Length: 154
Image (cartoon, rainbow, N blue to C red; front, side):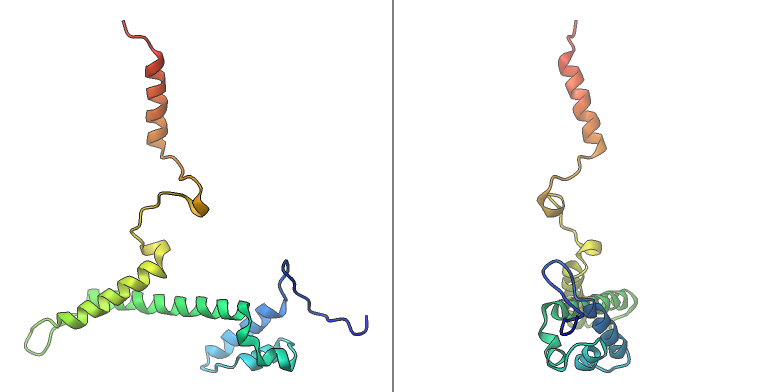
C-alpha cells in the first residue's frame, strides 16, 4: 500500500534493519571506520533515524556487549602475558607494583565480564532464582536414608 512503512518493529518483533545496520557497522569498524550513520543509511534507515541511530537502545546494548568482549579479550591477554613475562628491572629486581596492577585489573575484568568461565562464586540458586539441580550422590544418599528409616532392626 502507498505510504505504508516497509519496516516495522514493535515490542514483540525487531526491525530487520537493526541486524543489517549492525553488520555494516561491524564490517566498517573492523577496517577502523567508526561510522554508525553510514551503516544506518546502508540499512535503509531514514536520514533522521540514521543521525540518531547510536541513541537507540538496541544499538547501545550491542555496543556495550562489543566493548565488554573487547575488554575481556584484553584482560585474558594480560593474564597470559603475566604468566609468560618476567617483571624484572635491569638489576633483576621484580617490579611488583606494575605486575600487581596488571593482574588485579585483569582479575576484575575476567571475573565480571567473563564470569561464566572464570568466576569462583558459588551459586545458592540456579538460573533465574530456580533451585539448583540436586547432585546424584545426594539423591542416592537421601533415598538410602528413607529406606533405612522404614526398616525395623532386630
